[in-house]
Amino acid sequence: MTIVDFKEQKEARRRAEWERLVAWQERELATARRVLEVLEPIVNQLLKQKRVRARHPRCEAPGCWSTITTLHPVQGRTSDDALSLVALCARHLGAVRSGRFRVNADDADTLSWQLYDRPDAPPCLQIKWPRRRASKARARRRPR
Image 1: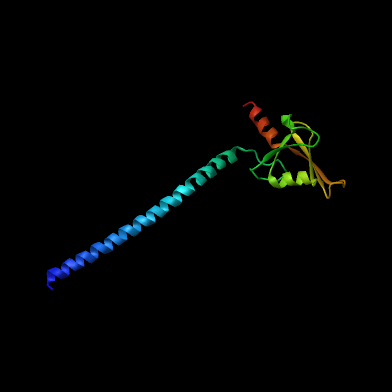
Image 2 (image 1 turned 90 degrees about the horizontal axis):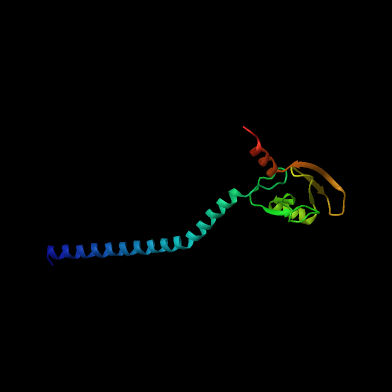
């Protein structure tokens, strides 16, 4: 063996090592692309929900800041009347449906909230609270 043969063997080993490195990088890159293909629709859906969520009204229960709400008709009215619909988060909607809370629309600007220990008991607490939608509408109507 001569020095030239050693150099050729060393060059062949270096090329083989380089090809293994490039093949490994291509496999890792393909894995990352597959993960991104799976995550892209999920991220787009979450971003779309965030845009929609930011436009939804907050829960109208006193002290609640949840922005993920559903519209629920107040007791004794139907969903045909826009003033009878109350925006409630899942927690407060469950309390209304179970009978722990009762919500009545006194007029366009206030809601009457009644708290019950159990469904057939008298109310423990009753408060009148201004509607969030009504206060925003009033603020927009003010002349400047």
